[in-house]
Length: 155
Image (cartoon, rainbow, N blue to C red):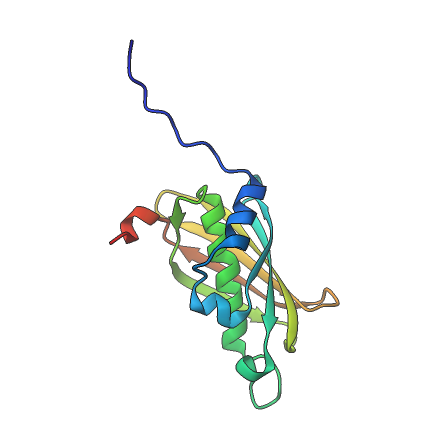
């Protein structure tokens, strides 16, 4: 009789979604952006998220969402997609990101989509998009990130 180490059971899309929805330890940056996970698709290495852009926190002098916050939302979409692509075993700190803005964001709900285009041992290539409540594109981004196991961050 040989002892065979069992592999951890893969999480379903619904299990990952519920993990995000039930977390008690949401990062403060995610809280500030009003982040909420909406859908997970491991097969496509993608996520759909929602942000609640608060006027009292995120607006510039023109009463539009400041572009840096839109970049943070895009980064969040792409980073969470990386966590999903890893099977919830790794994070992927952003190395670089290029953002294109199409229209100003307004306070309220913003839908985000993040996707991992290629997941490698040393680098991940990502894409993100933000949409207003009418479905119009606000901004798009591409990025590269470094897949890093969660265990590297445990203290």
